[in-house]
Structures are given as C-alpha cells and as structure tokens.
Image (cartoon, rainbow, N blue to C red; front, top):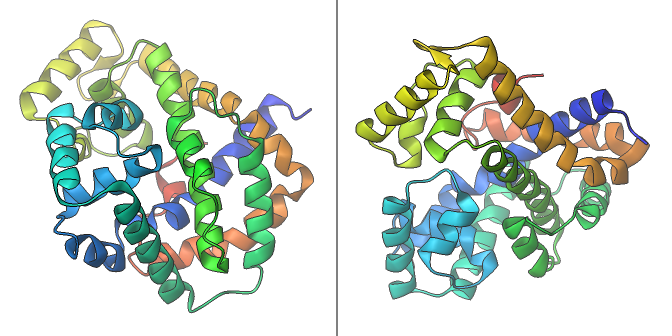
Length: 284
C-alpha cells in the first residue's frame, strides 16, 4: 500500500501532467469554432460542453458540479446553450475540437500514445464514482475510438475525478466557492484577486469573502495566517487521499506514464494551448 508521502507526490505529479492535455479543449480555437457554429459564445459553450457529460441538465446542476463558479453566470449560460443546441451535439463539438487541437499541437499521434492511454484508462477505471459527478459523466460516454481521442478522454476522466475530489474536500472543510478561490490564489503564490474574477464573482462578493476569511483568522491583509495555510494544505491532502485508488492502480507504472506525458504536456503549454505550466503554480 502506498504511503501518504508517495501518494501526495504521485497524485500531484499526475495532476500537473494531465491538466494541459485534458483542459486544452477550453483554449482550443478548433473547439471554439465548433461552438460558434452552434451559435454559442465562449461562456455558453464552456458551461454546456463541459457539463453535457452529465446529460442535458439545467444550470443549477452544472453549478453543483463545477462548484467554484457564480451561479448568476452559469445558469443563464446553460439556459442559452440549451435554447440553441442539445447535449449530444455540443459533446460532439467538444470532442471534435479537442482531438483536432491536440493532433495539431502534437503533430499527429506521437509514439507512446497507446501505452499512455492504457495506463490512464487503468487509473480512471479504478476511480470511485460516488460523489464524482463529472468523472462519472465522462465515464458514461465511452471512448471515441481513435488514438488521440482516447488519450484525451482518459486524461479528462482522471482530471475531473481529482476536481470532484477537491470540491468534496473544500465543501467538507466549511469553505465557500469564493473563499476557496481566494485561498488557492494564495496557495499558488499569485496576487490576491488576480484569478477569482474568472469564476464570475464581482468585487462586492470578493470583498465579503475576504472579510470572512480575515474574521476567521485564515487571512491577514493579503496573506495567509499559519492557520489559513494549514487549512488550505489540509484540503489538498484530503484531495490526494481521495485519489488513492487512481494512484494505486498505476502502481510502479506511474513513472513510465509520467515520462510519456511530460513532453506532450509541455508541448501544449508551449503552443499556448494551456495558459501556464500547472507545476509552476502547484505547491508540493
């Protein structure tokens, strides 16, 4: 059985390498073009295409699964999307865009893709589904049946499983969606208030959340207190523990997987297909 230190290191390394491959779809012009053809702008395309793995659900369900986004942004965006298209159609557009973008960036199908997909699928199949709506929804879709599509789907399942685990961890810790976003800015060592607006929260909502964190003794000024840093670290540790099944399924093959994924992930970042190297933001 893997010990907690190895679990932490391995799960966070997997997170950092999978992230650009799975999430390139949110920055891929090929995907945006496919959504525009359906009459969807970026916001409606993002929320509907990512949430459609759960079915053609209302915006409130997407809010629950995505967790950190302002419901006032999410619900109308999903309503707009379902007024113009449906879940199977937007899922097809998402898949088309993701595959085309990765094929462009990776210049076709690199050697090792099939092996990496086998390992990622093994990890995803070992992941528990209870309490993991997005990972479960993706798992229900099956695999596209082409090398890059299968790699992307396997990476997306692993990515969303950790995301679902993270949501469960911060909700259980009694932290709200604006709170966790501000705490993550401090955890990443990026300027406070520099990321939270991308989740749709306005200045008054951010002010209220920051005041709450300060009143709880978790933040002082624009920095963590020791108690705040410890709480944020505990949330990440709780997330790691929920990934035990994923990591133990990889076993000694984890290093092989990482060697395969690393150059592809770096290629996505270098191409502008993901905004920054996640390992440069992540805490060890």
